[in-house]
Length: 129
Image (cartoon, rainbow, N blue to C red):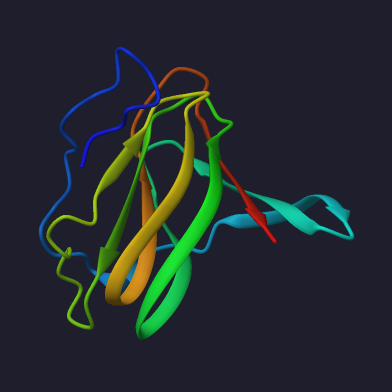
């Protein structure tokens, strides 16, 4: 998948085919705002890191309203129980990019990798309804 959010979006993501799940970090999660309609959270980490977004335990997952509020490009992807990247699950967002819907079939974990960029902060903003 490629990002259609920006005209100059990267069309390829550099991801290893197998992830060492023991080395993956938990991002800092901060509630940005909450209303009766839903909540918005920022998941923050250093550019260059790989972070957990959600544990899916073999179920399909869907996320809506994902925004790249940081200064580096990040890639969403899913892995199976063995840490192998699930083919076709990668989606890259450039800074200020918006993804209205990200869904993935049965997966063990949904993760994001922050690529190196200027400023050094990776911020994935996610809204729940």
